[in-house]
Amino acid sequence: MGERLTSGGERAHNTAMMASEGKAPRTARGAKTMRKILDAALLEFGERGFNESSIVSITSRANVALGTFYTYFDSKEALFAALVQDMSGKVRDHVAPVFGEATDGLDAERRALAAYLDFVAHHKEVYRIIDEAEFVDPAGFRDHYETTASRIAARLAQAEQNGDVAKADAFATEVRAWALMGMNVFLGLRFGVWGKEDPDIVAAAASRMLHDGLKP
Amino acid sequence: MGERLTSGGERAHNTAMMASEGKAPRTARGAKTMRKILDAALLEFGERGFNESSIVSITSRANVALGTFYTYFDSKEALFAALVQDMSGKVRDHVAPVFGEATDGLDAERRALAAYLDFVAHHKEVYRIIDEAEFVDPAGFRDHYETTASRIAARLAQAEQNGDVAKADAFATEVRAWALMGMNVFLGLRFGVWGKEDPDIVAAAASRMLHDGLKP
DNA sequence: ATGAAAGTTGAACCGACTTTCAACTTATGA
DNA sequence: TCATAAGTTGAAAGTCGGTTCAACTTTCAT
Image 1: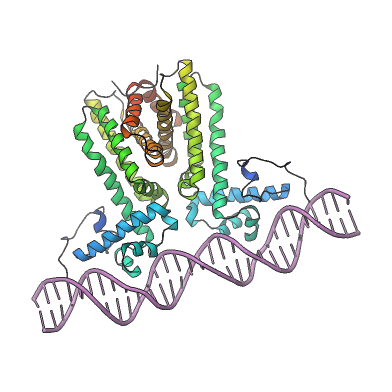
Image 2: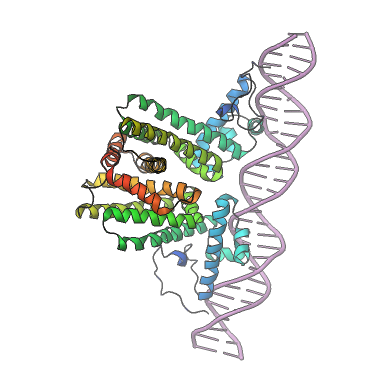
């Protein structure tokens, strides 16, 4: 048999290693095959959406037999769910580095938005899959946004401590976080997925509004 | 035959009167049947989502025969598209009245958000259908949001004229409009669909942020 | 009254897709 | 070397739901 990949006991969100309960690949060969399926699925779901996508087409793109699919995933839905976790991580990983370069709390959010806009412009499939998760994998969808909102709220709370942003109670901070996130997502749709404006310009405009407010 | 309903020449978005090309009901009896199907579809799609919904189930809820469906709609997708237009109008109609009561441009947006939060809390199906349109009826989805964004942008531009909000060029105004809209939608998801917080409290917190900005 | 347009019915057709499975291949630990 | 676990294969089963259609009913203008 192939070499052991893990010593067992991996976390539920150990992405590509735990697609469906008890179906984790046990050799490097299996892991590679599973990765091929995941990659093909990203393309297929991104292009056609969940409904129009078929397992036949996905396995065909991945150059594996139809039956192989069920070695790693319980169902089409389980595959999608695995992909959602995977993509949620990809977005996070693409945005995370900017926080190191930020001069203050608000600058951090501006950079995060710019990075996000850049990411969705180059990965419309990812945007689409996360959005479609609302219907195909509601738990994964909710998890993604609640986690993201928590991170934003934590950053805002820290920035409040630092005196970078105006003080607010926990509730107002949560409202701010969801407002920021929604703003980012919709600017991503309009100026990343549909349009192709310079991320920095858009982020600058949004950031200015956020910094100074709308009052004259 | 039944009495004539229209003199012809209605617009494409004359909702329930023009579901699929050449399938408009020609009598009051037909209009009623079509309405029953639309109402049943709202429930069905809202509960189960597009994929899990079936025409059999929809016509069954509506108490009409399966075949009747095809008298008014070309397909399941066409039904969904008709519903999207219908719902887009419902949201607009529910929010519109608040603008009369607003004291200024920013107050108008605060009231609009509160009204929207209240609406989605009581009509989760509508929220869900518009979201799912991204995949089932992309054109309708885009139309809904571009129209909504244009309305917001127009209000902002007017408020700028009135000196209620800070001046901005056309591009920044569009960014602001999409940012506002995204904020509203996500606050609707978090505090209307998932949670049940008082719309006025949430809208007040968001409005404060929007008015004064985040700077200390 | 009557005929023709409008509307209604539901069984049956049809194609498509997910999922299963038993045979086969590959890789490796002992 | 060879026994064994892991992985792969693809034909076929089984299911399901959208769509069609020809017969039937209702309504109303004349």
